[in-house]
Image (tube, rainbow, N blue to C red):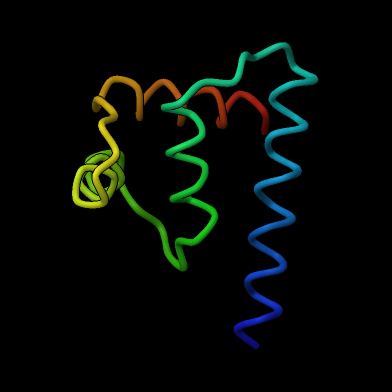
Length: 77
């Protein structure tokens, strides 16, 4: 099951990158960090929780950047 879940998250990550690129959004370090984190999450997380998790892992991403990435993802829906 874990392997299958990893494949699904990997597919989600790749699909999301393609969708953002096709929608005209530029790639950036903050977006990549947030998407990497979301791709391995197994539950919902608030923007603050995402920001804290990124900070704990050594990724320097501001809370405003996290909100911008989440806004962009919401636009894709």
